[in-house]
Image (cartoon, rainbow, N blue to C red; front, side):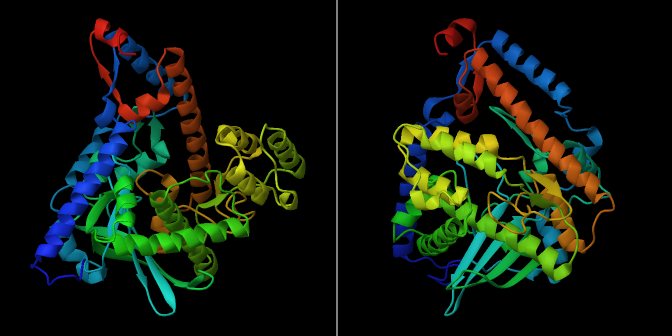
Length: 458
């Protein structure tokens, strides 16, 4: 929370600053909406016949990949029973948790996000940075004896199709008690990291259950605006965390982490780097400090011949040249080339790399590390609402105990992720075959109208 004025008091200057920030935020969101969201262009219009074709195609894909679209009644009822008075639950549990309600905290998400499952806080001290990543405490509600846990194991992950989402957990849970909405107290699982100022290494890592209260929900465009406006609320916090995130990003590249999107904006850089730092902190703690198995993310490296083939394909692109001193380290070679290559060639460079990359998988042992990130140990923790791996790692951290069927759960999560990706590819291909732009459908959604109106719109 802000220390600019006593609690319950507002100064005229603060009012003016907040009003100006709100106007600027709205302008930023309006610009984002005009760039392709439903607010700017409206939904893609289709007729009833095409809508039936899309529904039939989805049903066929769900059957092919064994994806459950509807939640069993028992799962729905269990979720609905938990969406009552959150405050009563917090009042009962607060003595057993770290109270972080007075810590300045905020979320940053896409403009159309419906649930907010991660929040951040940051401080700069004399000899260290302190970064808190707060994740919605899903395991407070979803545990191995619950129907929702069994359903999450069945589903494996949330499946994102253009204009259509199949959730891993009932949306009512994610959009209510597990959503870190502003100005309301919420249960969280916090990763507190004390980072050395010079090298950004972990001086200490503390992972614990907490209660937080988010001060504000920002969209990515609003976060960009706050970075540019020194008088806006949360400007200093966003500026500080971007300074930290930018250093972490550059350090990752220097260490050999593959960065396939060199033009990511500042707001996305903040969230990406903070989540990577938290994920890495959790799995390092599980492996080195606790010595327990977990759901580690393992990404094998391509063979030298495969890397050589990819680099040669990139080198032959028009207007592209790989720096001579980078050939011995393919990841650094790709990073350097992407930063200098013409924009028209970025997709081709990325595709040349992706073609030779083995599939990452979940394993109970981190042996082999994560090649693309160049992390010796890595795993997922920051998205327990949409990934089984994160949900299980939350439970392992909380209980310091490993499910007996962990290997089977790793295999299940890997297989369902592969199914979800293939399902998405085939659905996008079908949309193109029927004359729809998958990106437009994804950004703007669809609306069913009469045939004449749809034909003049598509």
